[in-house]
Length: 414
Image 1: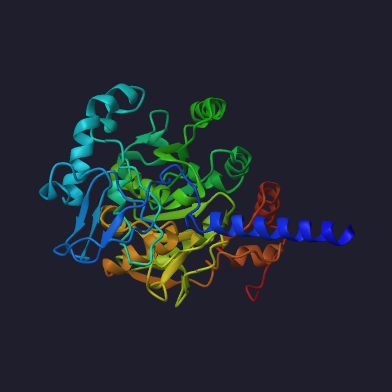
Image 2: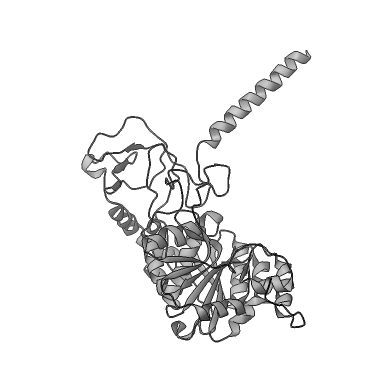
């Protein structure tokens, strides 16, 4: 009896493991609002040849696409009734076709948005890709909706006169639910934003929860420092958040000398950063912690997993790590425009300061003080760093006090 029961248990475990393994292979990307599942489609490596008969898992656009440069085409299921001549089209024609059919719907849905949304259309729905055949990821402009909800923002305080006298613009990417983190920053190192030559603001996306939206609206009304883009706020959309940051800086603060992109779990030693800026002379440069010869993580269980379909090369180009990096103001426009015409990758630092920056021949320079790591919570260590990572909300006040305590003297030999 016991032996039969044991065999039943082992059989049940084996079946469960088989089902779990099958389900895990269905998709490689974490689920976000831009990604979903569709029926298998057929892929051909050569547009002029007959499409291969074996279906592979390709979640593609809802329009037929032909990639003339990459040498492959995608046939969309259900789109072949009009004859072969209608099966293929260019990605730009596809996007234009979709947008033209949605204009009236967009106008009805976006009445509450600002005037910049007149030029913005809903993005093409993006589907995850999992295939043995190398397939280029879609261009960002196919999924990015430009514009911001920034009617409440205090432009004269953050970036007056398009940044004519702004030496440093600090834009802090933040999650919708991190209101406590934003408040701790406002009460500590964000005080330097009261200087006439320094501007600071937070960059967020949008959510689906009405109560959370109401709370964000109230926070925005109270502090007037929230820049909100038209994308779902999630980890997989950090690249879109950075592009939204670049777009806002390019549109509203194009004359700022330097732009610091940072996160809401960072402590920024603003006086030391301004001292560094005063010594810099180079143009078209990104400063930060330089990452060299980093390899994509192929482990599908990792938060940072990148499949071969998403990025096929064995190593990433040199890039500066994402917690904080400093841009010279003369590259913001180019980075924004080139980002829209670059294949999407969810790792925003690799995408922006690596892939896009390299395509524009922008220099990446390592700065020792911008290590983007956690350090000893001692006054002299804090004063020696420009960026400190993984700082909890309550710790912002501890570091702030250490930075300002003039009773502690340092010999600059930390």
